[in-house]
Picture (cartoon, rainbow, N blue to C red):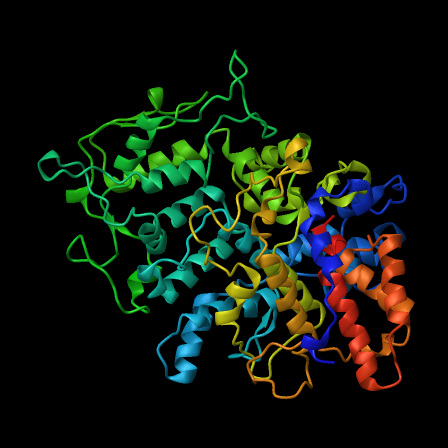
Length: 594
């Protein structure tokens, strides 16, 4: 059955359009009462012995494991579900932390060596999907990419600490630098946020993207003032936000009930002066550019040229209780590198950083509207990992994924959940169906952004594809809720995404005729035995895609659709499977990750 012949399903489109506007009682499947121990309790127990059966108290249901993996990976697979059941939640996280970092820069270097060609921009996207989907490396059959959690956190960080080559000729010419920036986020996913903040600040791609590169000290005679772009964004987007926060992420109010600004224009100017004098490593002249994408300077921290650094000026930085600098002022006379470290310390130790960054990571991984207590618990772990260390990202990610609100339905507010990004719907489909191309590579570069509305590191601006505070007009706004990903749900992108996923399901499957060797194709072979068992097929996908949360209404609709479809031939049975996949990945109950 050709994709073009599939009957239009306007009711699905309308449901997706209204997904966050529907009453929560329709979207949620009633959950059974929690046990005394609960999933959160079992997550804290040690992993079972590999030599014997799993103790009964550690048993994790398929649906619970899939729910955990929907938050911590690019989509659950049956193998990953089994692994979570073997190790427990915390044991699985620890194993993920131990896996080697999958490097996109290594992929580009290998691609260039293997083909004898200059690195192309589309290879960057190829590298991202190889690591997001996981499995065997196309250049090294002995290398298995298994660091799902690290790569998933790196993707979340890439939507907070944004660079993009979408509208930048300077970065469009620099795939080595852009991939190395993503690798920097992956390496920092379980490191310390203070270290990551410095590496992000000094990365040449960030320097170009937010114009800190070759920023100069003030010179009245030449009408030069330090560029304030990076100074604003490192505070507004990467660390403290615009208003002072309580430890639970709620705005701190003054005596008149108004939010208290985190900083003012003098602070922006102060940081702008700190961020002067930096340029590519290896530049003989301050203003230079490397046209060769594989030039070492693209993957090395920027270096400071003292002659262009604003050493003569004192600099007003952030002021907050306990600030180490008197009045938040960085005295004149320092060097560029020393003052940069002092300024980053000033930012990093601000009490806003834990709740501000912690809440955004919760939004990217678990739920768009975490309760204040959830944010407070994660922020507390950012402030102190239990051993007196601030900014430990491994501890933060554990706190997010193992929190009672994430693991136990009894702790969740009625508005718990998030809209799945289109890109994550695609990776989930491909991972669940063991999708692959014959060559090991892909040719999706020109279609991903057009069909899905987003592509890695290709946002239209530093504000990402969607804002963490975006609230669709209607009930979400009235209730004071946000649904960030719904900013992508335009009248153009909704049918486009539905059609794109439909094409991948109905037309691009292993065994289909006229496939390019580079097309990533879903493997339906393991699904075919379920095609003549409608209830079993629905139950299978209920776990794999909806974490066991399918409503009775949706189940009955799917069952009725399956039962009216023929199953006499192999093609009939394949189309049954494809129909279920299409209906599920475009359904409101799936699009909203509960």
